[in-house]
Image 1 (cartoon, rainbow, N blue to C red):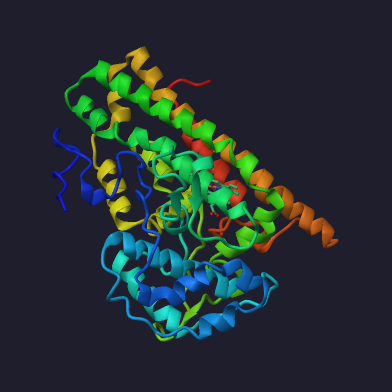
Image 2 (tube, rainbow, N blue to C red; image 1 turned 120 degrees about the horizontal axis):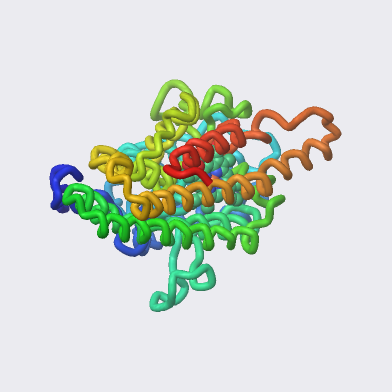
Length: 407
Ligand code: HEM
């Protein structure tokens, strides 16, 4: 695999293969593998039938019957990502089962051992992540057809009908729409180094256009994801065991660690795309308060190591913001602000989505349960376990404050 050229401070810096970023799909895994070798058929048989096994109450018994398989025959990145996806789905299904509060605090050794070994190999925590269920969980129906919702599908499902497909695919399509902006980053750094204002201005406008496209794609969520199913079904399977009162001690990975471990659940907060442009534009989320910054930093540990490295690399690049400020050129500042505005719009839209898909269903559920108090605990938390609205507003406000010109 190619080595990275030293740093984005060198004008020859490129996005090399080692960052695992694809020309077309960005941080998503290009054309994920769909089949495991035959010796892993027992895993596949469960993962492919999760909804039925869960609803008929057979899931846990089937998982407990699994043989303990070695991961030695899982060679190559794509195969390993597929196996992680399969084991991640099985793990979430085993823990949350029928979503009725009968939670398993122990993951049996026959699944925990290979899952943790594979996770260690890939440098990821042993829980279903955005990198699994969104970035590596897709295929095209017609391989020669376009990357559109209609021509795509997910590889594995949880109960909740097409809700998972809607959530995972729309997230993926947002990610892919923004991918064309990643390609522009080396052009931006090089333009700053060469003090090439015109190129920089055009490149920033290109980034803004890609981010606007991502927002358009985001609108599809309403068409494909039902709020009640999202809140009451899918969200449960994505929940983690960190800051979660139902698994306050964490999960015991039998045969791996002697005590339970805590990991946050799958969330698009684990996507690298927003953080990537925050970093590029010098939007300092750390100024929004310790907890928001800490959470976003923590989410990096739930991203593939290659993407973490990429964020660090972009962080070490020349400051685009300082350069634009220093030039004092109105058109250049406008192009920079177009990028920040596009990020603000995405985050504003995201806030509306979270209101529709989490806050309102949480209130409805509390009313149904005849509770007069505000929803609390898991109900009012994101799958990653955050006090979500405060956190999301803080991140949005910090983005907005980075505009060079108000309004
Ligand atoms: C039904 C749709 C969605 C819901 C209900 C939702 C919910 C949430 C929640 C609750 C958080 C807070 C962190 C946590 O606790 O996990 C969050 C954060 C975040 N989400 Fe979403 N999300 C949705 C779709 C998306 C999509 C499609 C994207 C983009 C690919 C996205 C990107 C982010 C990002 C980047 C954060 C971190 C905060 C930030 O940087 O602004 N979300 N989301």
